[in-house]
Length: 276
Image (cartoon, helix red, strand yellow):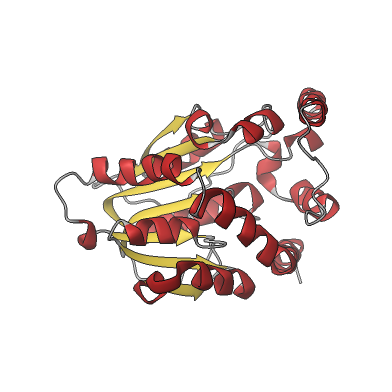
């Protein structure tokens, strides 16, 4: 087993344990809570604008690392044809349960985000959240996502510089301030369901912990054949007040990218960049 294989296994094991409690967090806070509308606007608003004039049911959406199924359910409610994948079977079980009557309209599949089992140019949209930071081969993932998107297709990737405090002293200081501010505001820092030790071990091994993002993503996506841009203020609209305080030094960003209708990448392209 390679070190990267061990990262995949560690992720699967970790999220198998956390599946039920994480599902409840998403269900209570977003799927059935006040967090739903901001995310609906952030995701469906961009899909509708990009495909203006197209009927919702003609748009095929792939939700990568669906977790408890939030994006998949949101897209299915909007009328899209939805496929949702995740590495962890227990997460897929939670997603199906959360989907309720919509479960039959969503194609749930166990799959690795870096090795998709779909034909070229299958989907109009790819959505994902808090995934790319955690991947052992993020460039390969982006190549795969480009491959399965139709020309002119849309990628919406929400992520942050999670765990950068492990390699950057200024980030560490800011992270400590976030925790102090959260504690002062009465926001609990010690979630008993989160094993920070395991997450830090994984973060220390994956490449994006050492990259400045979303600048890295824009460079790589452009090299692959996307027209890419970043919204570094998206956290202001989709995060609740506790998230804004607790994660102030690692704000969520959105990388929005459109597959170039004329460019097709060299599969041997070296997408790596110098580490900071």
